[in-house]
Length: 68
Image 1 (cartoon, rainbow, N blue to C red):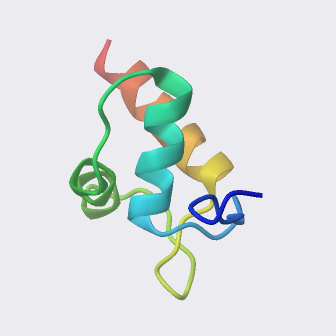
Image 2 (spheres, rainbow, N blue to C red):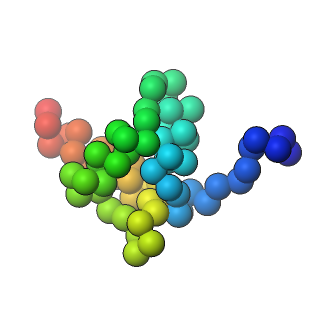
């Protein structure tokens, strides 16, 4: 494994880690500030402030569907 590529736990991500994964998967620029804005808007977080990627994606999907 490359030194820059550390494994992450998708069930407990920081905003920066979530942004990196979402940007890589979508091919769109996604920043930690964008993820933090979702948290500030009500996206679920764990007790330690980390994010579960599946829960975050479900929350984002529900919110996008509600806006259409």
